[in-house]
Amino acid sequence: MSVAVWNILDIDEEAGEEGVNALISDFTTKRMNEEGIPEALNPDIEEFLKHNALQFAREKKSITYLASACFKPRFESLIKCSEKPQ
Image 1 (tube, rainbow, N blue to C red):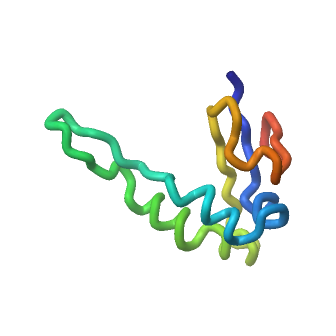
Image 2 (image 1 turned 30 degrees about the vertical axis):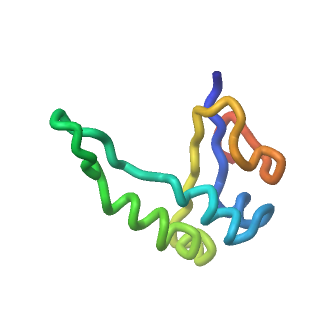
Image 3 (image 1 turned 45 degrees about the horizontal axis):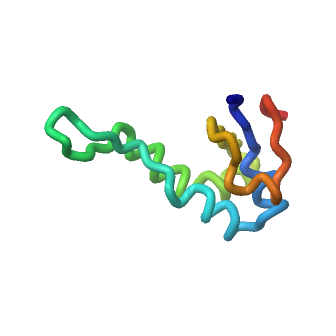
């Protein structure tokens, strides 16, 4: 298993804003605590990724890389996959 890394702007170029939103829609920093209750580890990261990351990248204010340890990334047919950021 390897880690695939994509620049959010590459995803935007290949799949459009809808593709970016579909890819990040499932992202969460939540995990189950000891009582079995979901808790967000970093809600600020979730908020930024889902609401600001693409626009900030387009404006060259910041860049976001998405990494996946999955064997087959959801958008492998739409975007270029690389082993390290470009």
